[in-house]
Amino acid sequence: MSDWLLGTRRHRPSSFSRTALLVYVLLIIYASLYPFSWSPKPEYPFAYLLEPSPRYWTWFDILTNVAGYIPLGVLMVAALSPAVRGATACLLSVLAGIALSLTMETTQVYLPGRVPSRLDLLTNAGGSLAGALMGMVLTPLLLHGDRAHRLLQRWLRSSSSRVLIVPMLWLVAQLYPQNYLFGHGQVLSTLSGWIPSLPTRATFIRAGTHLSVEQYWLSETIITASGMVGGVLVFLYVLDKSAPRLLLAILLLLSALSVKVLACALLYTPGNALVWLTPGAAGGMLVGLLMLSGLVFTHSAVQRRIGIFLLLGSLFLVNTLPDNQYFLSTLQTWSQGKFLNFNGMTRFVASIWPFVALGFLFLSVYNTRHHQ
Image (tube, rainbow, N blue to C red; front, side):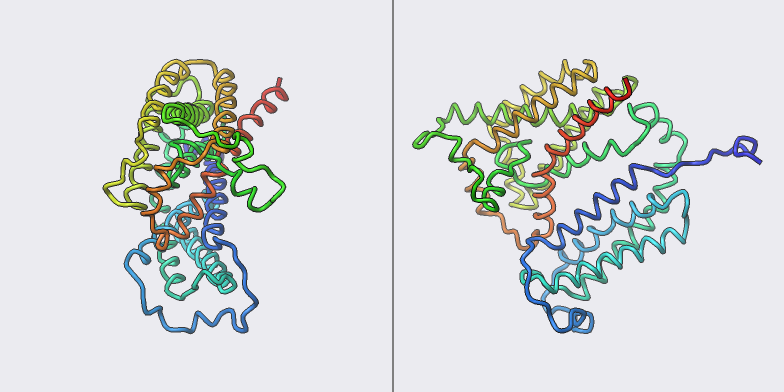
């Protein structure tokens, strides 16, 4: 008997969950292996499993290891649905989390700057279990609930929900401390260190030239406005005309700023939670809000073109302008010890996000022309 006669609807696998799971696994791998300095092969790579628990550990380390694998468990259950559900999905998710953690801990044996431990493996397994249990509750409500499904179908331009990955990565990118608010994609200094033949920032600036305070504020304003508007336009581009675009854009911005405040409070001190709110950044946000007040209601093709232009302009500026000396002095108070894994992951996301967003926008141009 068909699903229609039974009065039920067969749910399709969530492309968003599967894409998000792949992205998150790659981020875990990057964070676990950062900073990628290899050592000779040890004689017994699994010896750490038989060693006693580390003498020095903190509750922060425990909670971080658990929290890092909770999203993995949630996404694994969601990615398996609707083919595998219930206790079976929970068990497979926990086993996958343990396998990933075991692989990462064993690989860390070859990294001089990392210390694998059985405690990390156990806490990661606990995070996978907690996430899998949460996924069993959330997946039917968010992915297969009739109301949530109808909202996604109505609000997204594409039938595939995986397009939401790009704007969600923009939120993750706010976690890493930047020279400029929303100034992501700073890769030239890193690449020039790897490839000596590449130009450095200094080659773009005339020798002996220094930006005045007014020039620096103006540059910071342009970068902040361009990065903010570009990020929001990428989000607006995936939305359908029927979606409450203005409300969703405001929620996205508030979420991004909340993530920035929380990250600065944790990475520095609570007193530096608003260290990013400089006069240039405040001016850039004001300019960005004025731009978005009109761009929210424009045609998607216009949003796409302006988004590409702003992201390219922001990329050029953040890779050629000198560092913010006030930011560098604040960075001296940042102790990266507890956040080494976290820092490596968020730095990677902040560096590649503009390129991912540009690739997404350019690919949409190709797809539009191909369908026409």
